[in-house]
Image (tube, rainbow, N blue to C red; front, side, top):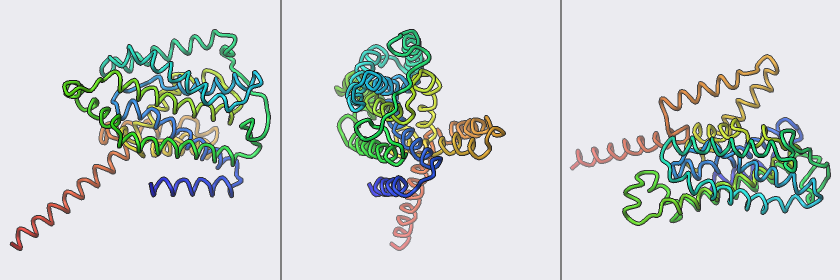
Length: 325
């Protein structure tokens, strides 16, 4: 909680004092991707079902916001509407697919995402492949602002709520059950843990989190289309953020988002057109190194190192005590 408080304080200072649009855009993107990575972490990190279709839930929120605004309704209504749509989609798609093991579940999520993408691109009321341009407004009622500071505050509120919810997850019955199922689903089932029911619950909540991020994204960019929201590439980015940072850890998605944003945004801004693709090369190299040497991600490697150090200190203390005796 101390780390979370420090991040909140730093975010508020940034929102209130920084006026550089590029810096504020980086902070907003960082917070948004941290939320998306954490939503993916709920089902893929804690439950162990690696999803490559999580962008469809992000798209539920983004399209709910676009539909509400273009039809003259309040974008605040998109939050519950997108959440309900995302949770329903997670339950409908998760009921048959969560019974699959390993890479079969991952392949199934790719197939579901491809179907959703194809449907959205052919539906006139969803803007087809061209998407939506949201009408320009201003103020909290419209969730649109001339300054980027309020967007940072909203993203910070969402990030804080998601981190607190994840802390609660880790300490809840749901969290214990998910970790047990991830470790050994047969042993967990033998003691009465209903795998499908608990994973469906986690899947639905992860979809709700991603949907809330989608609403904020739509109001920030004022443009929604399939490539920017529900495409396979978006799902892969979300998954890689979790993998690089550390799956099944509280701060892994935030660390993964930091690495992703610094490389994807920072390198591109620094090098401009001459650096096109360099960020992908560097990010790909980091992923390869982590996959080969530290499969638990950056945070997982840090936790493992601290545990080894604590174990060595305890062993040294025990040896000194034994020698004295």
